Structure formats: structure tokens, C-alpha cells
Length: 251
Image (cartoon, rainbow, N blue to C red; front, side, top):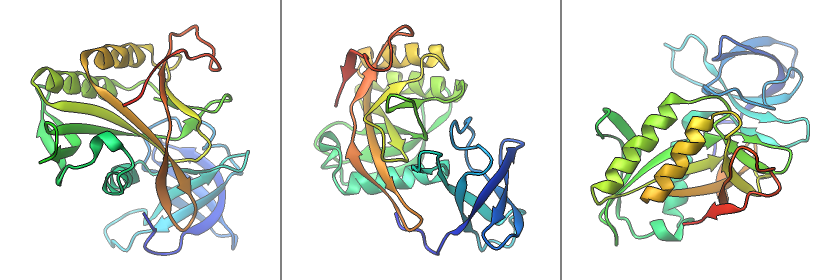
């Protein structure tokens, strides 16, 4: 996914009210930008970090600038705009990055489904296997052991999605969670059981029931973001150290 126009660079001053950031641009101007990310943005919200913004041409927007990329203290570029995740995954599926998801001829977006009135991010149809319901989760946090973690804050929405996916599997469909890791330094993916143990337990139950899980890491730059590398996904209990996540699955 290439950005349609050049991004604007600056330094992060602060994040506040969940969806707003103040940024000092390279020319010294201070602007307020929208942040399309509901998570804690661990390691990506420290004042002083280098950031890149996109500009919307929509005249109705109160804040025309959007935070797109943050460079961590370690120099890792991270795509923090959650609204990009679905398009990144759809592009990756079109490129055949997940062998088990090849061959579907049609992708529908934001399709209503489930007992709890949800919308699935992507519905893959007309393929070599039953239709596949795919929930996309944007991941920006990588821990000190190189493991991408989700969620970075408790998520009731994520729990609902796991329940819905499990029901679809019980009905004979395929269903899964696609972790879109918008950075290139992750060596593995795991649920953040220390942040949201309920989500980690629900993930384990869902996988046992047949829900599939995939994860890909992205190359991120101010010019483009591309999912290009598959990473293994691991399950571990709350006492397992990050260097020893023995229970794993790959699809």
C-alpha cells in the first residue's frame, strides 16, 4: 500500500483525549492531528519521537492531518493508523502471502454476521474451501523479546469477535483472526495475557474450537507499508517468559 501523497514529518509533542496528538513539524509549526488508534500505543506515544502525518482533502474534517507512522526510540518505523489494516491484509491476500487462504475469488468487506450483530472485516468467498470470515487486528506493540503482542489494552470488542468467529466455525464455515503487525522487527506473535488475560483465554478456546490465526509483519516507510513476512503465532500461559512460549500453532 503506497501513500497517495508525501507524508509530513515532525516530532511528537503529546497524545491526549485518546484520538489527538500535537506534533511539531520540521518547519517549527505546531499542529493537532487525529490518531486512528484506540489502543495504548505502547512505545509509540513518547514525546520527542519522530512521526509522519498524512493530510486529508476532505473539507469537513476538523483535523485534516492523521498520524500514520511513529519511529520508536530503537529506530523502528511503526504504522499506527489502525484504519489501514484491512486494506493491508486484503492486499497481502491478493499477493498470496497465506497459502491456506489462496484461491478465493471474491472478498467482501464489512459484512454483517453473527448473533451479536457484528461486522466481519473480510469475508472470503468462492474458494477451494468453505467461505472464510476474517477479523483483522492491527498490532503495533513488540515486547523486549521481539514478540508482537495483542491487545495492548483490554478489549471487550476483541472478545466479542472471538465468540462470533467460534460460532461461524460451529456452523461449518472457516473463520480466523489475522494479526496485521505494522512493523518489521517481530519474530513471533502472541496474545498479551498480562494485559488482557480474558482475551488470551478466549483466544485459546477459539483455536481449540477450530478458529484459525495468521500473522504477518510489515515493512514500513514514509512511502509505503507492505505486509511481507509471515511470523509464527504462540500461545502461552501468564507465567511463561517471553523467550519460552512453547505452545504454538500455525495455519
